Picture 1 (cartoon, rainbow, N blue to C red):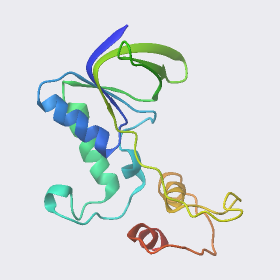
Picture 2: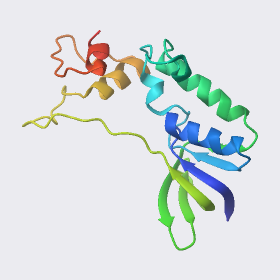
Picture 3: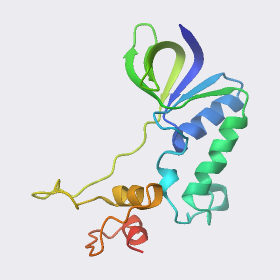
Length: 169
């Protein structure tokens, strides 16, 4: 059975920051993510962030993901497990069941576990919102920025938030 001091589940911005903070305090960390690269939602965000310089203002989300990912990979106290999905937790033993690359199953004992599995998109509830061609802003960003697919030519964007404006642009 594998062992780690701290298992961080999720390789998005929160997971990477949690892993870096723990590693800087001397802990041995295993960062587990189901994707083939770290970054979470940042990998599809081409817009520049706003806020303070400390919070990466004026840097594109995709570049923030690359910066944080590079820090994680350079840190000798952090081991990454990509293409790996935590599918079980045995609380009595502090053991995680992990499917690795859809090929094998391992167990990992963790002294501490941080769950940083990301956010879910808020989606308007209306009849037939599950029909083809109806997307949330996150799905549109994924289609365009990760897969190079234009989701449509005639678009109606509903929403008043900054992500809706960014995706519409």
